[in-house]
Every structure is written in structure tokens, then in C-alpha cells.
Image (cartoon, rainbow, N blue to C red):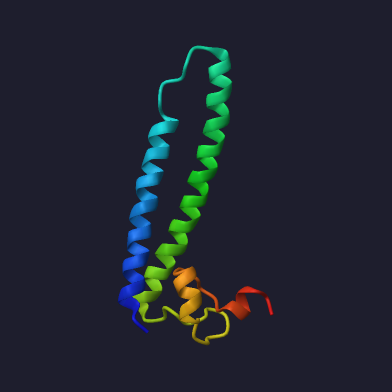
Length: 106
């Protein structure tokens, strides 16, 4: 398996998420509008941004774990059953720790 291909994909995605999280942090730390109606809208927007941030943080952890598996030589091996993870699955979800069968609970 060509782990270099997946490492590049993972690192590119990692950089993309880090950039997005930085933008989210900047947006959340901006000065608030004095208009109460605008404040209500900004509060709702902040909730959405915080959710995006949480999703990004979760994906970053999965990417970090996948990069760790690459470093250890266990990338592409199911963490549950020990069988190879199909490249088709890794192409779709490059940080997948489980094969399709184990991920679906079969």
C-alpha cells in the first residue's frame, strides 16, 4: 500500500482544518454589535461556528491517529480485526481505523 499518498492527503486535510479553525477562532473573538437584534443573530452564528469547530477538532484527532499509524507501520490495518482496510474505503475516509465490516458492526 502506498502510505505516502495517504500521508499527503491527511496532511493537506490537517492544514485545511487548522486554517478553518483559526478563522473560526477569529470570528468568535470579534467585537460584538451593540444592536440587540444583531447580537441575537451573532449569538446564533457563534453556536454554529462552535459546532463546526468541534467537528474540526474531532476530525483532527482522527487524522493525528492515522498519521501515527503511518509512522508505526500499522496504517491500513483494521484496529479491530487486523485485516487490511480496502483502499476504496481509505480513499473515501483516509483516517479510517476500521475496515468496512468492523465499522458497520457486522
